[in-house]
Length: 265
Length: 266
Image (cartoon, rainbow over all chains, first blue to last red; front, side, top):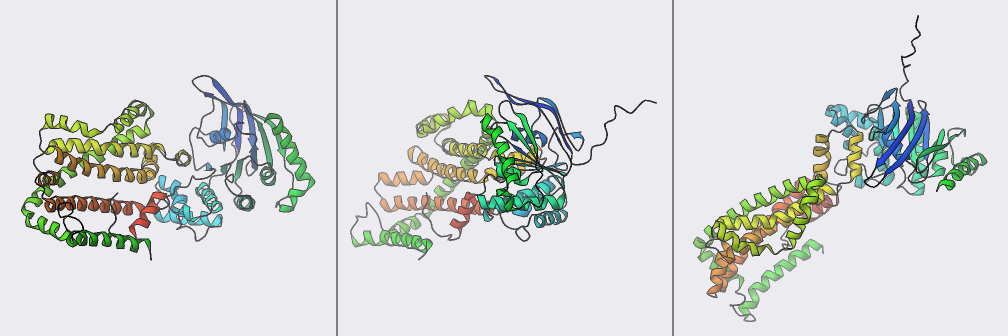
């Protein structure tokens, strides 16, 4: 009997597989290699952070995982299937800022992806309420974005990314525009939400402290062409606390990332 | 005292001065007839002013439709597609700097001195700012909003209806405000230049016989028309503000509407 060699084993929901992915931007004068031969496995439920200097293609990689951009070569699968176009049932995306629709209330913003799919009004409202409660914004649904603080806006964005309960949440520098204190609080909040939901999170950031504080694994990338230069396991215990920031384990991890980035920047 | 109250007091003060200064003899009637004699002149010749107003309103309404409809339509195309933008925008921008009134005599040669030439002139006059504002409104939509909508699986038509149109509305409305005001200017000016009917024609005719009260009666009617137009735009802005709160245009609209009183026409 032939072994069933060519049947792909079923990947569990939330697994991300990046295989030999390349991305070339064609401009009129020259071709720019944004990413070269990037391979990466993210197991379900892991919190993975991508760091690297500007222009290392980390956001590009995230956009490809979201189906918002197609790679020039290689394959990307989410929960075992390729992602040729955005699929909010499999992947939720949270952007840096200002991606809430200013003319909609917080709950209408969260309902937006459901409204696109013709979910009934009452069903939509109920699910938006649940999502807002999850991110700690119970009772703020009727406010418009300009009536919310920066941190609250990002909570709404997270609620919007989670409202269809996708197994994967991709976050593109979600806290970059926030002040230091809000940023720390939001980091803790995100970890709480992540623990409560068990999502796979891929998180892009510039901040080394944020990277080590949040991550199970940190992926360090180099610029032009974007490549993975290091893949660190962060074995600090959870829940993470503020005290760990000044510990030796934390410091040595951050130093290791910094040395990579300094070399390429 | 709130800004609105002060504003109202200034308007009332100006109206009072309009009555008092000519009556007290500080200003000759020829330069500025008193408000009461202006109103009396207008009232006594109502049989002449009413049909003239009807003609002017008719011309304004048709020109407004062409200017705003065409401006929004072409502005949307130019704002969203790069190729037409490269072709058309430089031409439109240069055209904007031309004093378009030089075209009016040409229009009267083509279309006669009736309403058609006024409509043609005022339509083009009001079309340009509406189109430019619409194009800018669509071009300056935050690409992050469109990316977010796409990440949630929005199709092209869903992005148009749910993101592009609501995001462009404040800019388009400000374009309508300028374009509509220019339509009124265009109609009245062309009536004053070469014409046989309309408020502008009456103003110009009474001026030649130095009948100031009748001139000012016409001026008052044009003023009333502009104020009514402004009120209409504010009404639309308020309707739009219901789903536009959050943008700056929406907010200022709400602030301005609250003291919905007489306001100077800009």
